[in-house]
Image (tube, rainbow, N blue to C red; front, top):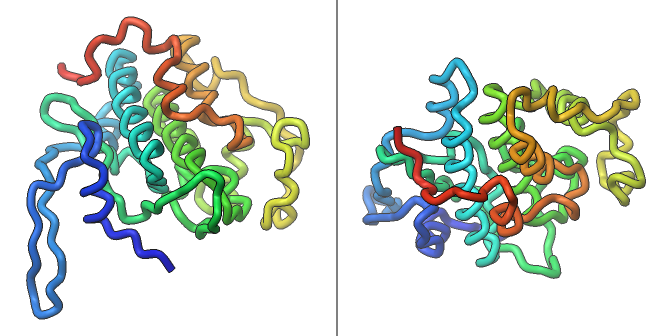
Length: 254
């Protein structure tokens, strides 16, 4: 079993959108490693919890760009985060967003040569292939989680607040519609596909899911929330979306 230590992940991810390690040491008889991270006073979860309304689109655009830049760098360097969620997206006093918590991160190669556990990622941000028991997956699980985070910013509430794994999958399909052989070839071959059956559900219109959001914001988010992981928009391509035309500064200050 590979053990991907957080120090390794942080050392390798020396990037503006990745939280920095500023010191390290050991304490106690077992020489337990201690990491000193740069000070980040807040995180995206606190911002969302403290806002009764959806964030301003200019803030959403900046936060999303920084998240995607961090993921693009990680994926280009073969790093699969596997736990993207608002509380793992730290914020500086100047509004800079940085990815943190590399406890579930693993190295990933293309073509894929290994299997992983499907019991990863926080449930509300867990990709549908993981809920269907997939053991062979890739960077698309991070993109699903990123799409769920962006969707949460747009909607002003969590998109898929499942109470169990089955309820999680149900809430996802209420928005995306039921998977078919056309929309997700091979879905029926996933280990847990036959363990749960829902009534046929049509996809929800984006204007309902992301009420009040721009067409460009909806299109970007829907691209990251495609059921078939092979069709999910990668981070680098998402950064080239027309949603970002005219965005000069990726920091977010009041």
